[in-house]
Image 1 (cartoon, rainbow, N blue to C red):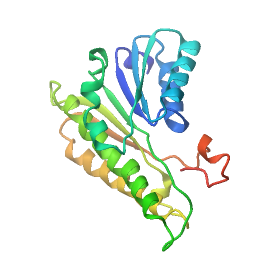
Image 2 (cartoon, rainbow, N blue to C red):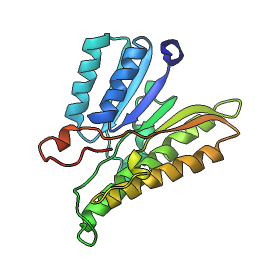
Image 3 (cartoon, rainbow, N blue to C red):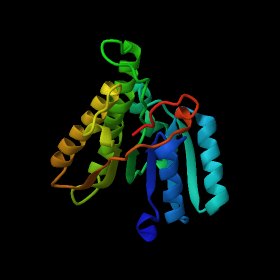
Image 4 (cartoon, helix red, strand yellow):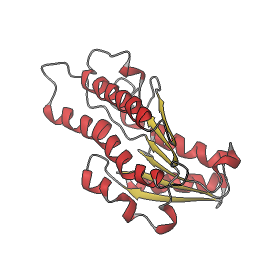
Length: 213
């Protein structure tokens, strides 16, 4: 696997913590030579720390670019490719890991603001990121090439009380992923969904909220 990743450029959203951070670390450990990682998230300070953690663990063979990005902002997402340094633009893998859950309110007491931010981040942000990067994959010879990895959730199949909006967003991710895979079936572009179970994140430890899944 490590040799297959050599020379690749990987973009990971939500890379400042949780699944996104762990994904970045694992890619670096698997291919510690000739790998480029674009780590995208809102918290640039945390991204720089992840980059330093990678450098300390695997050395300088992995080039890491911390990139401040709010996937819920369509303008930022549309401009991501042109904003990257040229050496990081030939992207091979997109990992859509950015996602969040806001509260455990039940209908009809769910705040509209919470609904909007979960949909904008978990659904619209993931779709917009895919649309921003997919043209790079499709331009490659022999029908295109690349990998799109969407982080879904078991909550798409096993919804829980107090999580109706979050679960609905993950159901949307699952449906989008399935449809996209069918659209690209005649290419060499792979579309993958990973559905984790409960995951403890830094944001949830102080609040005692249900672990994100």
